[in-house]
Image (cartoon, rainbow, N blue to C red; front, side, top):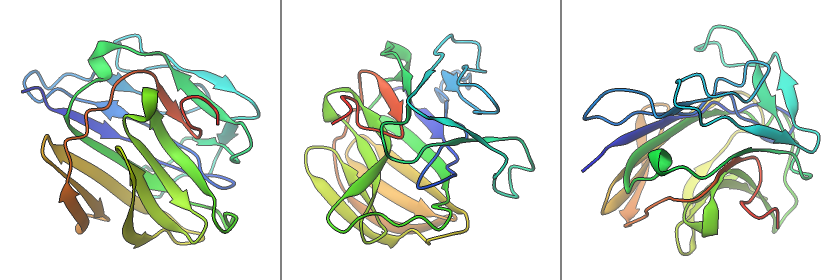
Length: 195
């Protein structure tokens, strides 16, 4: 079984992203790493480069733990980064981790803003109108964790192939049975089909 580790840091307007890394545990090499330090290029060397769409941009707002650089800024109005589908990004055993900061933005009641999305709705993470962190892998599930309106929080999704857990700032916040298997394109800041 191949293990993939994802790391993302999120910032700006309503949501944004700083980096995502995928690491097969067997080889300990990166499958993808997007620091979003002024571009959407894959710094891992695997060539999973992204392209910016809409008004996606960059901000100097980053978590202190990262120690500087930039973050991807999206406002939920058609702004996103698209990473084309690649088999190196697919696995049912993975860790998806990111820093999140809404920077004082609030979502509309009854709506939500996606942090990440995979093709065909195979796996999505989002912030709902009430600030709850939610995820989709066949149905929307509320994790019970509310993302603060401002300030950084570190979220890490861990899938072992049969269970999916959410850790917030290193502590377990949510866990459920799930056989999620993300595949297809990878998008930051919008649904895979922009709807």
